[in-house]
Amino acid sequence: QVQLVESGGGVVQPGRSLRLSCAVSGFTFSNYAMYWVRQAPGKGLEWVAHLSYDGNNQHYGDSVKGRFTISRDTSKNTLYLQMNSLRTDDTAVYYCARNNGAGGWLDPWGQGTLVTVSS
Amino acid sequence: QSALTQPRSVSGSPGQSVTISCTGTSSDVGGYSYVSWYQQYPGKAPKVKIYDVSKRPSGVPDRFSGSKSGNTASLTISGLQAEDEADYYCCSYAGSYTWVFGGGTKLTVL
Image (cartoon, rainbow over all chains, first blue to last red; front, top):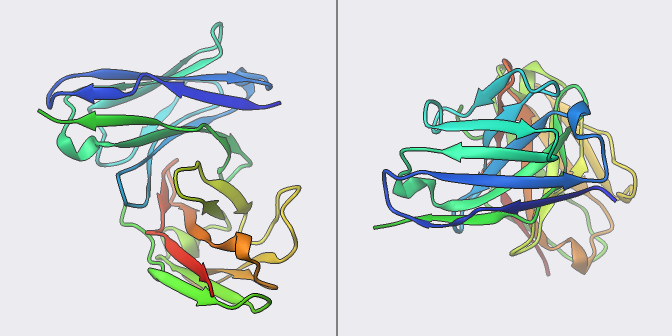
């Protein structure tokens, strides 16, 4: 079955970097666009990044543009989110999700990984 | 990329219907037929209930329905059940490969 499993979260100091991974299985990874979405503690969902199905185009939310990079390794069936210059307001559970359809709807989602930015 | 506006909370009794609104602008909700709705239980990942404004993925009961008028999309849950108690989020395509979520609505089944 289709499965997405995030990893790489943890506690990091402001200004430092962290890389999240999302291991996918059960579908042809190279055929699908992918997303990262985050949720700060007690808050709502925020779209973070989108990677096109061919891996050639990346798009970002305003709050992370210039600091975060979405990428993938199809040989490892893994999606990544490189997060640089982390700020305290980046603290959140980060979910990866698969795109479906032209307008983009997210299904399925991974279980999420918690990133805490704190000194 | 301003968040879409949803009511903070709604409630209903078992068997009743509830509607959750999601208001955006002509640049997102009003400009595209790409609104989706997600259900999230505490501590769990979201799950899609509606996509492309009014379509249901396989396995989602027809008690869930979606619609849109102008810049406002709506999710209606009929025949309310205890298991429907959760947080609900709308999401809209906003052009140029960007998406925006609503602030979320907590549904309480009385």
